[in-house]
Image (cartoon, rainbow, N blue to C red):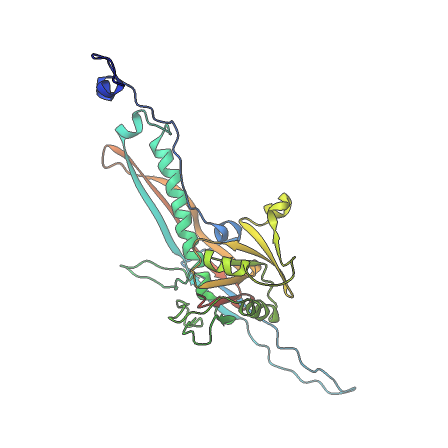
Length: 325
């Protein structure tokens, strides 16, 4: 069927002829925000660019049988160990022209406010990435920034290899620096035995690994572990329990306690970390903030920044499985 000759249609008029555009007054954001560590870990104050703390531990338990009436003897006390991490600066910048801020816009009234919100989420994502990955610590210099060692790099003692042929390594803290952990070049399947071995390693020295941080591929492996039907519990059933741990999805029940499985976008694919949150904190020189920069053009500048480091109070309270396929 043909239209009548001379008909005026939307195809002939279009926006050039005065037809208004049909644009929704909303922006559908897809923000892959991930800030479990930044949200949940303790916050402390840092007063220098190299933030330090001390750690100590008990001697191993052993036979202790004293003789009645024995004269006393003393053992020299072992001094606490002093360690530290460098405070890292993370920042974001944006510039919005005067005109763009003034004109009518879809989905927002202020370009500056929208940009500040978006850039703050991006900044916190970057901070989270630094906190949980295998970043090394560094003092920096005039041409390089300081860096804070991440969680994966700090966990050195209780490292379980997914396969015996793995070349994964985690250097020990030395000379004020924590080196970067590696996952090696040989990988093996993530097994329940490896997972339990990591939980046991942390428990045996006093850790309570209530949080498991893992990426999607290893979360799928954990979901497939065999065992009693109550081993994996849906935490969404009880609102109070779900609200207690930000981002919790499942609960794994082992001989060493209950472990909330947290699916995390920034944890590396070959790594699963068993965390005791009591032994971690974030030290801030400056918590995330927004400030205007001086005008040098017909626009508004904003600077978002934070200066912080990860505090590993005692890495032995935690464990990890590395080199998982």
